[in-house]
Amino acid sequence: MVNPFDFNAFAGLWWVGLATNFVVLPVCYAIGMYFLAPRLNANRLLWVVLALVPYVNWLFEIYVGFKVVFLILDNLAEVKAVLARRAMPMAEGEVR
View 1 (cartoon, helix red, strand yellow):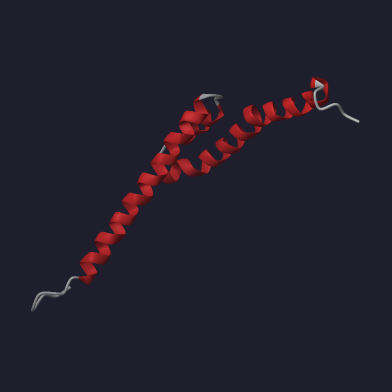
View 2 (cartoon, helix red, strand yellow):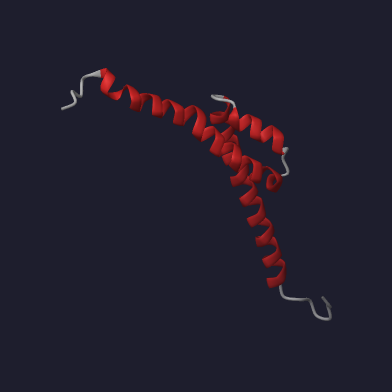
């Protein structure tokens, strides 16, 4: 039976967690940034590199999240403006 207080029993699990945080997650972020950058009119190479650099990518992910939210809000405002223009009654004799 494994002693839960024995550090050696969980050393492998600790290394797997460390590898996941510093290797696997940044690579997944970098792949996502490669496809997301052109949609946000950003430089692909710069966004991939920023996603791969440890510690920087955590702050960068917050920035990307806010940028995506603001882009969605801007697009919704455009849609709302277009729908508002279509819903306005036409003045008498006005041709669209």
